[in-house]
Length: 71
Image 1 (cartoon, rainbow, N blue to C red):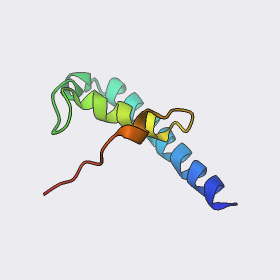
Image 2 (cartoon, helix red, strand yellow):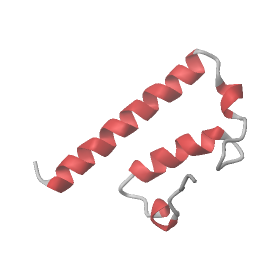
Image 3 (cartoon, rainbow, N blue to C red):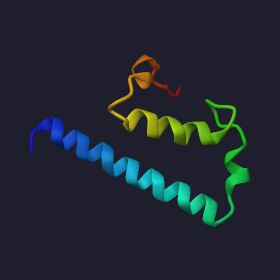
């Protein structure tokens, strides 16, 4: 595999796990907890959505985002 193919595969694996996490949240009826704010968003759901957007290589949306830096 080329480096690009490897990176695409890794992003696909992240997306798969994201889907599993979302399914688990709904199955365990934890949705209300993800409606609470996180450090960077009004709702924690936004952080999960951002992971999905960043993994989507057909979208340029995440290219203008700034990296979150902890102090």
